[in-house]
Image 1 (cartoon, rainbow, N blue to C red):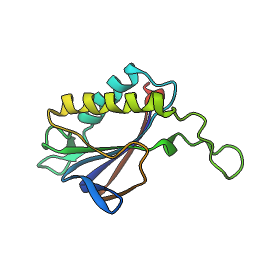
Image 2 (spheres, one colour):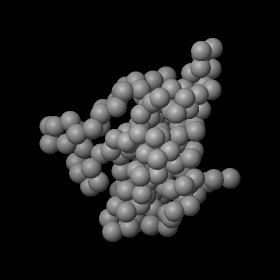
Image 3 (cartoon, one colour):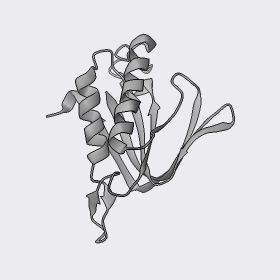
Amino acid sequence: MNTVIQRVKNASVTINQQQTAAIGQGLMVLVGIEAADDEQDIAWLSQKIVNLRIFNDDAGVMNQCVLDVDGEILLVSQFTLQASTKKGNRPSYIKAARPDIAIPMYERLIQTLSQLLQKPVMTGQFGADMQVSLVNDGPVTILMDTKHKV
């Protein structure tokens, strides 16, 4: 799984000109699911996301996680994160999981994150044409790939 994790003041998803999800302070997480991803990737990634110390403490040092600041998470599936741009100018999405694999993995990731966060995770809609808005706080943006755990 490839992710783009952004510390945000707020973020939202709009589909067909209707806002369908929104959060205040927390993490905006874009996730690209690869066909080779499995439950171990979900477990590792979920733990990393909720424990990632990228929020400021009282001294202004990034030393707190989303749990510490009672933050929220907005998770959006984005297959284009699996793009390969090695050849030509048109990205290849051959590594992206097909919906029959990706949807259950995405739903499991939502469930796992919600359990760890101890509150619902807001989401986009899998496969929908979405407009994602956010105010990146910092800016703080972290790229994470479960294939590079070590």
